[in-house]
Length: 368
Ligand SMILES: [Zn+2]
View 1: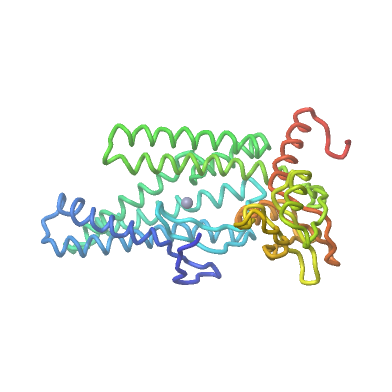
View 2: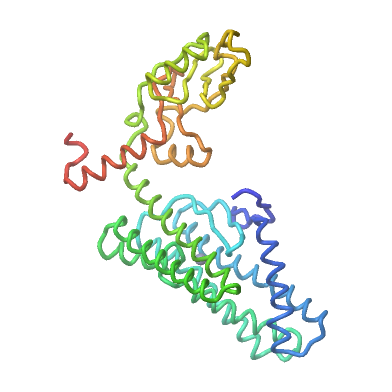
C-alpha cells in the first residue's frame, strides 16, 4: 500500500502506517472526548481530550497486536510476512503466500480474534481491579472495543477473519478451495449488502456502515477472483501464454505502423535493438500539424519496455506483477535475450476461461 510510513520492524515484519490512519485517529479522539467519555463520566474538557487521545493510541496498539497474532502464526507455519499496515478500517498483514492447507488458514485466521479477545479480557480485569479514576474509563472503553473487534471479525463474511475461518472449514470438509471460497465470498457480499442497508436507513450517521459494506463487497469479490485465477494458473507456464507477434521496424512512419496495428489487431508494437526492447503505443502518437508534412519515423516516440524471461516466473506471479504495474502487454525473452512474442492480460483470462470449460466437460489438460 502506498502513502505508508514504516515506523518499526518486529520479527522482520515492517510495521507501516497508512496516511488514512491519522484521519481515523483524529475522528476517534474527537468522538471519544466529545461523546463516549462525557456521556459516562464527569471530567473537564481537557481531561476528556487527553483520555480520548490516549484511548485512540491504545486502540492502535490493540489492532497492531491483533495483526501480529495473525503474522506470527503465519511465520510459524513457514509463510513469509512482509509488513503490517495500519489503515482506515484497521490493520492488514501482508502475508506472502496463501496457506496451502485448510488447518493452516484456520489457525492464522482465528489467531487475530483470539488476540483481541485476550486483550479485551486484560483491559476488563484492569477496569474492575484498578482503583484510579482517570484510567478506569480508558480500560472500560478498551475492553469493550476489543471484545467488539473480536466479535465483528468473527462474522463469517470473507475476507474478514471469520470468513476465512468459515472458508477453511468448508475447504476441509469438501476438499474444494474454489467452492469453499465461492460460498464464503457470497456470505461476505450478503453481509456487505446488509451493512449498506443498515447504513441507508440510519443516514447520515450510517454513512460509515454503507461505506464499509461497499468496501467489503469489493474485497469479497476480488478475493474470490484472485483464488480462481491462482488455482487455474497453477499448472500453466509462461510459454503457454505467449502470442507470436512480429517485431516492428523502427524506421516505419506512423501510417505504416497504423496499418500494422490494424493487421495485428494491436495497440502496441515492439522494437528490438542493441539496447533492449522498446515499445510504440498508438496513444502516444503525435500527428504532424501540417497535413503536407511528412510523418515522422516511429523510433522518435519509442519508449523502453519491461520484459519477462520465459524461465523466470510462474504465470500467476507474472499476472500479479502486470496487474500491480498496470502493464497490458509484455514482451517475452529467453535466456539469450531472444524475443519470443508477447503476453497480454487477455491471454490470462482466455486461458482461465478455457481451463474452466475443460473442467466442466471433464477433459484433463494433458489429454488435448
Ligand atoms: Zn484479523
